[in-house]
Image 1 (cartoon, rainbow, N blue to C red):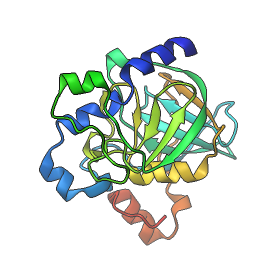
Image 2 (cartoon, helix red, strand yellow):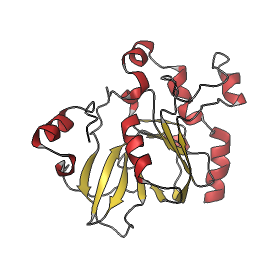
Image 3 (cartoon, one colour):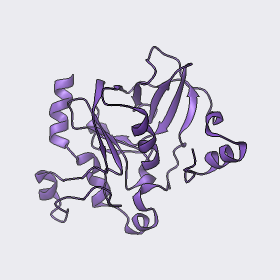
Image 4 (cartoon, rainbow, N blue to C red):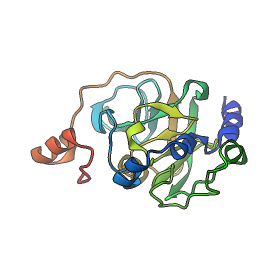
Length: 219
């Protein structure tokens, strides 16, 4: 399984971000620098009840739910919306986080450059048009990543060539919670969870703001 995933990831390295850069709506990029905003219909991150034999501190990526779960104690989890791979880019397995990068640099492959000669040779880390966003968590010995985005309106969609995209503020939240070595289960299984719970995010006023807008950075 891991060998197959590694071979596939070698072929598509960084392709998970390619479509975003190629077809990025300029006006949205300018209006939503660094992908902090939304435009997505995906339910924002929230705390849910989460039953299962998963150790606290582990990450469950459910392509079926289009969510990533950070497992906490007390049968709870933080549920993050994600963009998932297209049908021809399916993968799964049990892995570990092997590397963490702040403001990752994006370099298109030679195949990408041949397909689209207008692609830049690289996009520097921290640039608002960087398809990897502001953080990247590398999964196992693959070249797949959980990473941010410069196109937040695509979160919740099946758009990538393998990588798992998150809102930039969400990938920062997850990045700060997990060390290298964290277990990651990638699956197409769907999970039964409770209705969204915002109890862990402060005052009633702040919870209401969180429910109605993904622009609230105050938690």
